[in-house]
Length: 206
Ligand SMILES: [Ca+2]
Ligand SMILES: [Ca+2]
Ligand SMILES: [Ca+2]
Image (cartoon, rainbow, N blue to C red; front, side):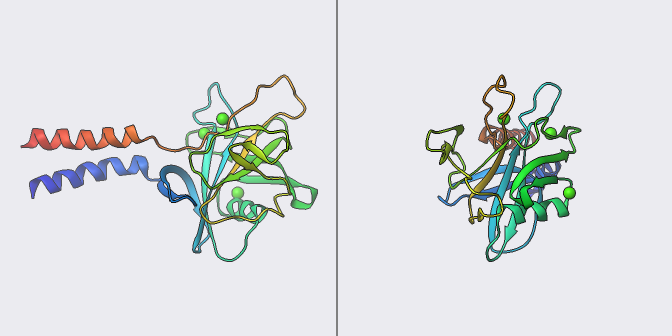
């Protein structure tokens, strides 16, 4: 009984740090712990939007994930409008809402996220939570292992269990390097370390 109480105390002490951690299941049935900023919507379908501003230097984090649930049919544009209305992410779109001009996010770690080259974002989706984002290939259908969004965001439908990615790139400033999209998956070693810590305390209490 003492052991159980001790373990519960450890878990309750640790959980606030991982409050936004969500076990997401992709279309392939794989799961991963994703650090989600906030959830929007209700429904049987679920996707995670990952936005990578590719910022470095004094920034704490360059990418952030936003959870979205819905029923029926929803486009990427409708999702962005809903997530914007529901929290700190702010969107600026053009061409009648078909393209992303800019995305703004002041997050709890103190960072202020925006793109300094408005309109230069790559969009894609994937059924594989571990897919690698990459350069656009010659037929413009893929960004590495991700499927490139070739229509406007108001024409691209969400799919249950897929990840949606929006990645900062540079269209006009060709001196900028290619930049990857980083999904904020919390690595397994962190989980193992926490479990190890719990076991250590249990042993000491024995
Ligand atoms: Ca990145
Ligand atoms: Ca950040
Ligand atoms: Ca907002």
